[in-house]
Image (tube, rainbow, N blue to C red; front, top):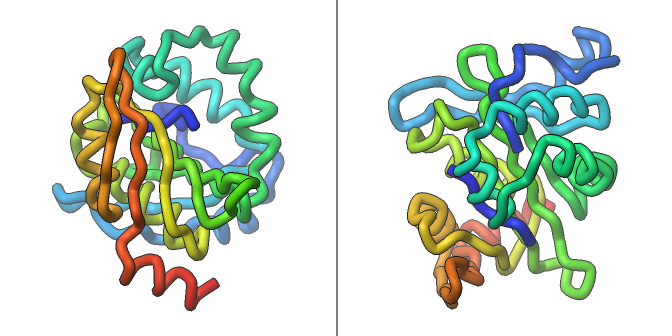
Length: 202
């Protein structure tokens, strides 16, 4: 399942390149279990993750690439996106996480606040093809919101043929969508209880 244009799995197990193993281990935290019982862990996306992102994207099917970017994206085009997808991550206005299961990275999620209204954010999730449909995207979305602090509203774009992503977003709060020409502009009013909990923790 992939959502958002407003990421990646299948690379070999490993910590961010260039980080000492002890430091890398400290970045991981438990993220519960998938619905089938598989335990998952999460860590922040790091500047050293360039190779992980490239390998993960290379393993995605054409359908997953289209779901993520609303169009076909080549490996070379994705590499040119890295200055935005990786270099702007600060874990405050641009939160990005890597999800692991069975010792492998299986997904990447990111939340980016709008500069015009920092309480509104875009949320995007990419899950490796072999792990789609198992709840990994929902885990990533939950972890992103928990780490981001207070977010009142999510605004993103989802393919009209991507009901799994629409269901995932609907779990985060009250969803409304405007669909035309194959895509849906989605707005989610984040549930009051979850938003208040994150605001108090911020």
